[in-house]
Amino acid sequence: MSLPRAPLNLRSIALTAFLPTLLFSIGEGAIIPLIPLVANDLGATLAIAGVIAAMIMLGELIGDIPSGWVVARIGERNSMIWASVVTIGAIVICLVAPNPLVLGVGIFLIGIATAVFALARHAFMTSYVPLVYRARALSTLGGVFRAGWFVGPFLSAALIHLTGSTQAAFWVFIACCVLAVTMLLVLPDPTRDLAAPSAPTATAASTASGPASPEPAAARGDAASESAAGTEPAASAVPVVADDAEGLFQTIRTHRGVLARLGTGAALVGAMRASRTVMLPLWAVSIGVSAPDTALIIGIAGGIDFVLFYVSGQIMDRFGRIWSAVPSMIGLGLGHVALAFTHDLPSNVGWFIGVAMFLSLANGIGSGLLMTLGADLAPQRHPAPFLGAWRFTADFGSAAAPLAVAGITALASLSIASGIMGAFGLFGAVLLRRYIPRFAPHRPRSRL
Image (cartoon, rainbow, N blue to C red; front, side, top):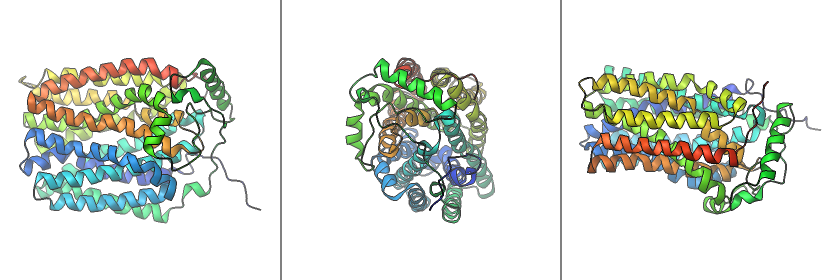
């Protein structure tokens, strides 16, 4: 007779759950700030450099289409292994790229692989983490990604200083992917020894076509309170999907109510984060900041972003998701608006540094927000298809924002692009304020 499986303990699986993610994100963080600079070295204009930088977000969006099916079919660990292998091939394309077009193809493939890797780890955490500390666990996962984006630029800056080539940063990503694959092959698969928390079979079907009714919302609140005492997690706010491999677009149709409303807010969160990621390197190129200095500034800003991940989780678990979401979006919106007025000032470099730090502060307060909301809404038994649809919705904003920045920059200026994105951020705060209480109610708990 087999022994019963144990519930998840984050300390016991920290190495296997987070180390491969940390390695992958270090590599990603090493190249993201430098993509516009590499494109510029290959002869791209500022607007074209913005488009190439957007390819990683566009790749993530396209990668969301098969990612839920892939993860459901081959499992989380195998999905991350193959995503890392594809990433290595894509980086080789970037290294040998003779022109911006080939570089864009390589970056696009990296985005596809990143979507599969990220969904695999998200699905694992959604299935095995009890609701009572879900936000902190997923914020920790978000913090692991941010730790990589913090460390990666410093490694890039050091390599660029030693080699004099911005493309040297891509070798960091190759090394990190090789190490991640090694860890995934050597370390035990945590899903073999863990039991997923049981979940109720009946859920609020009304969210498939419209707003949640008061009855399911109350039920979710009661379940959350019971989970605080160590019982089962709350019911999902979306219908349970019987087929693990349900197609992305069928899943979107099934859950169109929540995705059209709260999903739009999530798309704007993704848009603001992607805009920040692309805007800062483009701004540095525009005002003449060198590549090593750009990597250093963005790396320090990433440190601010990283140290706030657990604070964000505490806020969401104790007071509700809305208290992380709305301040984060307001901060991202105001930061973009402020940046728009600093381009031609004599102290524009100082303003650039200050706004970069402020945007990281705002983004850090929202660490793990989208993953937590997705986990709140996803069916407990088969989360991957819904999480694929949820990530597709959020990544649509992530992909659209850099393209919008590039287009507005080509037609007007980078400053106007920053101001317009800031307005979208403030609008996103309004949407989240309205729809989080409706679709993802959460009762604060005095003791956790």
